[in-house]
Structures are given as structure tokens and as C-alpha cells.
Image 1 (cartoon, rainbow, N blue to C red):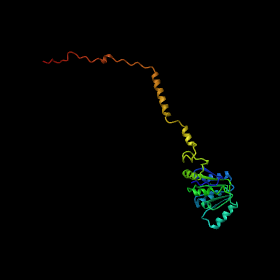
Image 2 (cartoon, one colour):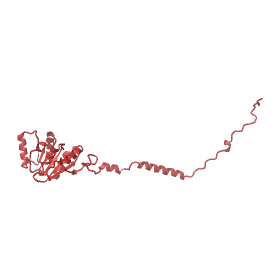
Image 3 (cartoon, one colour):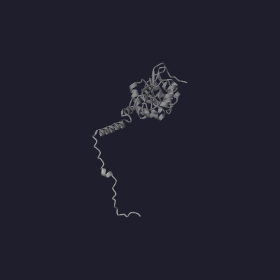
Image 4 (cartoon, one colour):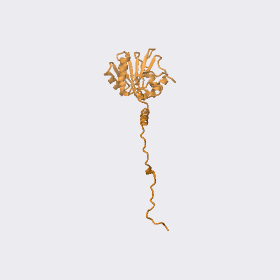
Length: 239
């Protein structure tokens, strides 16, 4: 059973190392220039840490999760709805039951394994027949989960930056060869050095054959004759 989101919602993926995720997210926000964005994290701790780090790099970033008291959550939600907050870092508490019209981009910082959660996260944008993008940051551990999620929402993989060919299944990884692999293939193929050694030894053998051969010395005939026995050995004949 597939669970399609809004028709004008574009699902995109960006492969990166886990340690690069904050840098990649900053780059995507600056490149995409969203009107408003919602950034989904896996936990309250991750949500607050990411908000603090992003606030050092870009303007107008706040966070919202279920650990805040109701009054504060309501205040932040209203400010975001009025456009006073541009980027909101959230947990799944903001993925359900909240309708913000100005969201042009959803960034999934940490991928969920739950299909329903993914559908609700991505569905925060492209609402009311508007266009929107959901960009998921993918690490090497997320290939299988991504494949299952895209199958359920009936969407193809669509990389902004694809992974190298060393990881993931055939449907979720890029087939471009990595620079390391290309470098390995540029080296001499196996057996070449052995062949060259064989060629060198063959040349050396042929050079030996071309040299003039010295005549072998003839054996001394006297050395080949058996020793002569003398007739008189001073022995008496037997009677």
C-alpha cells in the first residue's frame, strides 16, 4: 500500500557523512533560500543542539518540541505561522496536526524508519496545491530505510548529491566510480610486472645464445686408457 503525499511535493536526497550534516544543512539552506523551512530531528536533545549550531551560521532559527511548556509552544508556533521565524527545528510533534502555509522546504536532518512519520514530515510543505521540496540527509546507514520509504510513497530516488558506488542497494546508490577506485584502475593491471620480468629474462637468454661459443676442450686420450699391468709383479705362480 502506497502513501502518496501532495502532488507537487518533490522528494530529494543528499548523501553525506554523519560528521558533515550540519555543514551540508547550512549549505542547502543558503542555496535553496527557502521562504520558510521546517527541519526535523530525531530527539529533543538533537533538536536543541542543532538549533544552537545553526543560529551561529544563519538568522532566524528557533526550535519546537514536546518538552516545552504549552504556553511557549503556542508562542513559538504563532510566531512561525506569522513569518517572524524563518527556520524552525522540530521533532515529530510539529509533524502532526499543525498547518503552516508558508513552508517551502522541509529538511529531514535525521531519517525516520516509520513511513507514517516520513509522510507527515514531508507533508508539511506543498500544501494547498503549492509546490514544495522535502530534502533528506542520507548517511551510509540509511540506504535500506530510504529504499523502503520511497517504495511506500511511490517515489523514485532523486539525489542532489549521490553516494559513491560502495554502499547501498542498486536502487538507492549512484553508480559513478569513486576517485579511489578510478585511481586503482589506472594502475598497472595484475600480472604486468611478472610479464615484464619474463620479457627481460627472455631477452637475457637470447643474448646468451648470440654470444660465440667457446670450443669444448678434447679429452686427453691417455687418461681414457685403462692402466697397463706389468708382467712381473714378483709373485710366484700357484701350483
